[in-house]
Length: 281
Image (cartoon, rainbow, N blue to C red; front, side, top):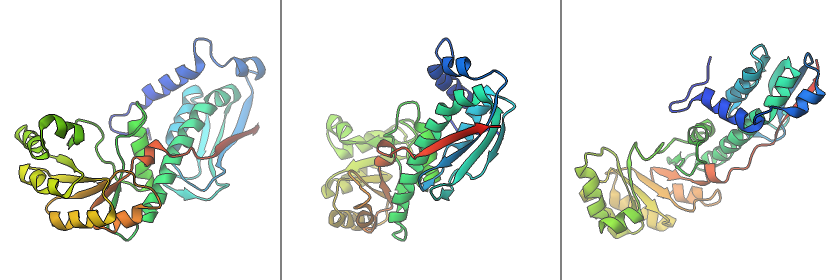
């Protein structure tokens, strides 16, 4: 089955990534060293304990350069696996496998790193009732893939772009004049989902009165968050955001907020240590 995500063109991603690597002349190392008819087998494995993400895309890179490659996926995206786990076995034309290797590994390492970090944050708030959200703090051009990886780690996607909800932040408020006026204008425009960022308790009532459907409680400590949740009294979802770390997220989630959003999931996740070892086949 072809790997499909909304607003993601797999073929275009494969082409642009391989074009970046191959330039105008191709893989000169493999062409010079590897006989054209050579065949290699190989195993992709993880040297870390990880949450897996990106294997179908890795397979697509190998298949793009050798349509007859034999691939055996040993785990699935979203699986949590220990260090030393074999993820994917392959058998195909050696030149093609070596040419696709870096692109395939880069993708799985990056996405599995995001999924793994996300899983740590999800585990940290288990039992609190709060849901982990990702953000728009993604690498340009990779948002759909990075948000796919956070889903594999157990988070919920929050705003895929500027088009799916109004997000009124401090600069919008500064231009509009007040939280209430900014929210009123969004409501007057007929926007169904109006997220309003507030960093003070006295901004909550004006935002709700003007039509906010979701409150982003920015950089509030747990005690202030509890006061905010009490004031909102379940009228709209509440989201804690700003500077959330793995060592602070549980106390934040225990304040009673509906959601906790974490930019670090996509901004700061280290790549997973995943390798691809070839042997003559």
